[in-house]
Image (cartoon, rainbow, N blue to C red; front, side, top):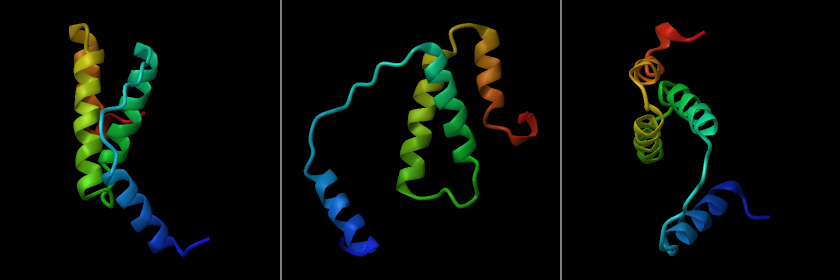
Length: 86
């Protein structure tokens, strides 16, 4: 098995050769759960760089999709603030 940096380099090149889009079907509950996990990950101080930006954009898209009522929208907004973690 190649050492770790080489493995990541190969994977990065493999991904660059891919085209098209991936479609994922989630229930609202699943999307809500993924949103919460992405919000938590986005707030981690070591989570920086291109991958973090892509994940945040995806989280914001999920937030728009699951915020189907004013109450859900308000609760989803709280997920970006660590003061509201439970």
